[in-house]
Length: 175
Length: 155
Image (cartoon, rainbow over all chains, first blue to last red; front, top):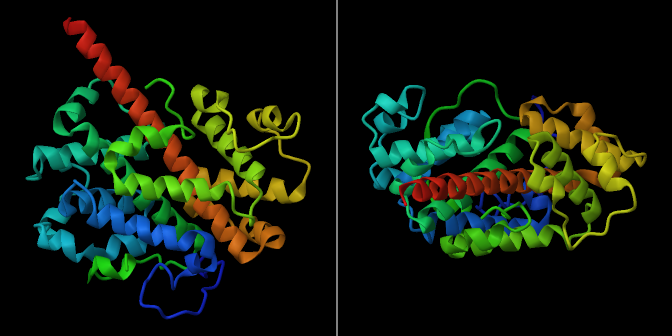
């Protein structure tokens, strides 16, 4: 992984972390990416704590150091404590996470896997845990988290060592 | 939903509401922007389809893009294009698909040499959207197939 960024930034200080990042170099897409992030967090039928669980599962799978260090305020307010965030790890099946939370991690792993896909024995469990609307919302959220974290890794300049956990307002990526 | 691919995904995600609409707009914008040729993005999609070994995705064709004769078959066969800009982008795409952490500075520099820094960022965004949509489509196809089969077995 490149330890220096492969591209620069637009040099703006708008306060939106996406617009001020390298993504701001592409005005054709950056506004919609910000809007998408806002819709994922603010206009969804999936609770913020569940979204944060799949976001962290993705971050740890992709190994995005920045994404792994962030905790969004809305998820914390929705009950995702650091103790529960730590359960999103190998052995999560035996953790105190709820069955619905475990099913969300299982769906994330299906999406993130090689090959991607859902095994026959898991499909009925997912269909029982989530409505059709919730499955669609989780997949949109997963795609959003996945492509933004892989973008961050691809651009480079990421530290190799873990960063301290920081709580961020989701508004810094959506407004 | 056996027909679900990255190209038809939006109608299957529509029940998610505003987030799905926004995702669809972002996707649609890829095929009208001018930083990376849309036919190159379609070749990236076919490259990922090959790497996923996804027959449905490989058989699909983006109606918004006209590929030159032979381009489609060559990419599906894993052959690098003769055009150096296209070859650089497709090599970068293969690194990206394998693991974003595996991308070399040389591969990134080659893309920047042809498309500039904004072009590299756009390509990275596009690769993430393409791969994500292929993955999501596979999940929805499997979910539909396996739950339908279970329901049929109970009839």
